Structure formats: C-alpha cells, structure tokens
Length: 503
Image 1 (cartoon, rainbow, N blue to C red):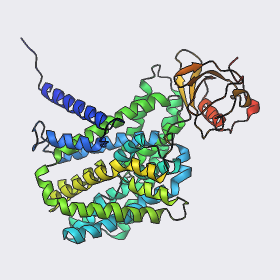
Image 2: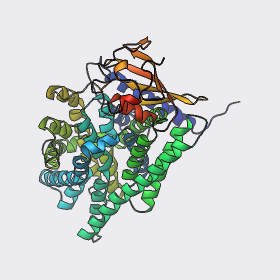
Image 3: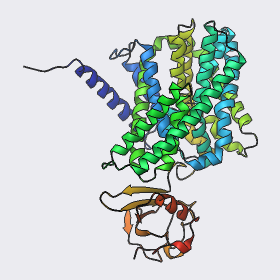
Image 4: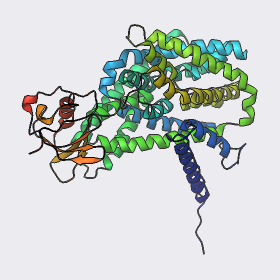
C-alpha cells in the first residue's frame, strides 16, 4: 500500500536543482574561492545543464509561461529593491538616475541597434528591436551585485533608481517596435502618449498605494510579526495590479510602493526586509534557472562572434555614451561614471523581453533570443566578475553598503518599548564621541554597546567607534527610529537628550 502523487517527482527535481544552484553559487562566490563567479551566471549554466540538450531533467516548451513567470519574479526583485532604497537616495541622484532610466535607455537602444544592423546585417526594424531589448539594465543582477560590492552612496542611489525605473522604456520600445513590425501604424504621438502614461501613471499609482499601504502597516496590529511582510507583499501586488489595469507601468508602481513602504514603516523594517530579501533571492535563482532551461546551447556557437561584437558595442560604446550624456551637470566624478557604466549589467530583463518577439512570431525571434542570451552571458561574466576589482582600483570602495540603515527597530512583543539597533559608521556624528557628549533623544536609553562580538555596559565616558552596534530601548513611537537616526547623524538637539548610559 503506497501513496504517490503526480507532483512528487517535480517537487524533488526542483528542490535538488535549487539546492545544487545555491550551494554551487555559495562556494564559487565565497571570499576564499579562487574563482569569484556571479550567481546569475551559475544559475543560467545549471539551467542549461538540466535542460533539453543537457541532462534532459526538465523541458520548458511554453515560452509564454516562462515570460509570465519571469515577470512575477522581476516584480519580487523590484519590490525588494524599492524597500532598500532610501528617500535620501532620491535627493542624491534622482535627476541623473531618471535621465539614465529614460533618455539613457533611448541612447543605448539607438547606438546598439545601429551596431546590430552593421554586424548582423538584419533589416533596420529587427536591429532596432534587438537594441531595445538589451537597452535596460537588469534590476536582479544590479541589486544582487550591490549586496556584495559596497559602493559610494551617490553611485548606489543612481544605480538603484535607474534599474528600478528603466524597464518601462525598454518595454515601451519593444512593444512599439513589435507593433510596427506586425503592420500597425505607430506615430510619434502614440509613442509619446504611451511613454507618459506608463511613467507618470506608474509613479502616481505607486505613490498612492505606497502611502496608503505604509499608513496601514503603521496602524494595524496583526499580533504576529510574521504577518507584516506578507501584508507588505500584498500591498506591492495591489500596486502592480492597479497600475496594469489603468494602462500604467506596473514595474514603476511596484518599485515606488516598495520605496514608500520601506521609508514609512521603520518599526517592522527588519522583518519586512528579511522576508523580501529571501523572496528576491529565491526569485532571482528561479528566474535564471528557468531562463537557462529555454536555451539550446547548440545554437549559440553560430551567433557567438556577431553576439560578441554586439556585446562590445553595448558595453564599450553605448553604455558609456549614455552615462556620460546623462551625467552632464550632475557633478558625478569620472571615476564614479566609470563604475556606473561598468555596473550596468544585463540579465534577466533582456532575456524576458527577448521572449516577446519569440512568442509574437517575429521571423527573427529565435535569432534575437539567442543573441540576447549570449550578450547577457558576456555582460554577467565580464562585468560581473571584474566590477569589484575595478571599484578597488578606482579607489571608490566604501566600508559599508550605502543601503545599510543607520537604525533598525526590533519590536518587543507585549511591551510598550522597542529595542533599536544603531550601526555606528565613520560617517556618523556619534563616531569618536563619548556618550556624555551626545546624549540620546528623550525617551531613549542606551542599554548596551556591542564591539567586536563583546557586549559592553555603557557609561557616560564610553567612546563610540566605527563598527560598534548600539542597543537602545525606546518608547514605542512612530518616529522613534527617525529620531535616533537624526541623533546618530548629529541632527538631533542634544538638549533634548535622556540619560547617556541608561541609568
């Protein structure tokens, strides 16, 4: 007597595939490894190995299903990117970031399309379509790269804004060119209306849903901390769905919802971020594995040389030109411009967009997909593996990731106080100061100082150093984390302080 379900082999196969992918990526990207390989590249390779021309463990015949699942995965990644983007990032790099996300995509598409026309000899519309598909950077690859490569605040902010907002322009170009190739008449007015509707509509919907969602998360008492991340995920899904329903960009909307929720709900920030970082990592792994299953390695050698030429045009000509033109007047140093240019990784987004002409029945759809896949491989392999050495060589590496928060609340259930962590960085006013010289704000007490793994009982003459972690108890208030962040930066009036050492 036995019970066997039809889904059992699939569950086992997917679990083994995920296990192998994660462990392989962890070993290859560990600090002690001699070969630092980006996880995205390994996931693609494992997907190809498990596909039809490898071990034939899995077969994906429905490109439309892959496209739809890819969109869902991208939404999870974009939402997590919004959650980790600080409002201060917008003040630092909003103008160059949005220029790169819009004008920069058009410049990149135009230059790359021209290169495709010269190299592949295809008709101009097909060349333009391929240029549009690879024009946007990939949020999954860029956000993943920034988790392991601490970058200056302005560079990190610019890359986050660009990667979170540049997909709609690439989608617009791809959809418009597909319609034109299909015989539809698309005039300049149609292009302009579509772009404005997508961008401004996405911003409006994302901001509105984000503000309402943040207010709900602050006020509602769910009783269980683990429900807050799920509610945040639902709010992000509502933002995408409403935007898509009214004809706006769901990608921009979900990114903005994440940004507003991340900034407006500090008390549950740790649980929300922890959950969505795990979801984004799972989505990234699954997305690249799935896209790897779509590839037929036997077709890649035929496009290798022309695809290398296209990748060279994109990486060494189109991307630097777009960054240089969009950075005019921004005060961004040339070293930072070089990092921004080299960090413009292509990944899952271009491959997902490459399924659009494939599923639309375009004559050169298979060629476009193969070339785009090869370009992504080159981008991830070359740019992804050399970005950290480039950052060190240019001297722009920072000690702490720019997205790392200054203060985080750790809610204590059943009590009317929260425990707040303050990470002391050398850029904060409290670094190098004694607690008696910078007493914490009212209704906040320093409970402990964690230094190099040891817990110190704080005194008034305790001097804080970069790398220390302060543990403070604070009366439960909506602006508690904000007040402690301002205090750590030296913006809080010391006269309003409490006891410096908690007693």
